Image 1 (cartoon, one colour):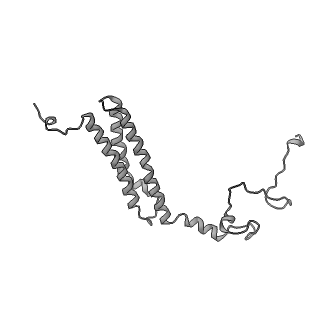
Image 2: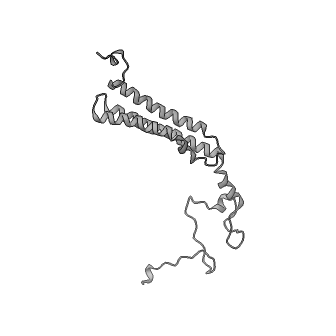
Image 3: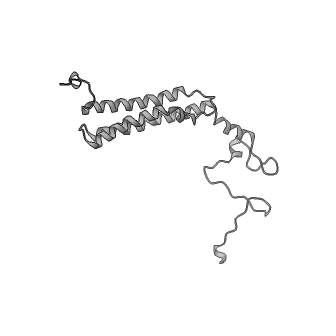
Length: 169
């Protein structure tokens, strides 16, 4: 192989006398996060510091899990907004497309509410954090979508809201 295209990189073991490559900008190793100097090491392999491990464990506390669950529940507002926009754009006429969109806007939130237990189980499998608040927020946003779908059915004239809808004559 041509010598112009050969590049010898150090393997990072320190045995060959070469320096290990520097971290890219914006990257922080566990040692740097923990406050330990990059050159010092514990043991033969340069173990990680206790503070870095504690900081990663602190990222998994019940309070952080509840915060993530609230962020997920609030993220459903975008989905509800998209479904409301789709119902608006489909019009009030009784035709196949508007009915499919409207019934999807009834089915999807009902399914999401019924499976909300499994949805929020991933945020706290151990049961240490209280997921009642985020789950209620999630269900409330889904109920808003259900209410908009029922309003759309009413404007399409598909809900029996008058006495004449029930008359047999």
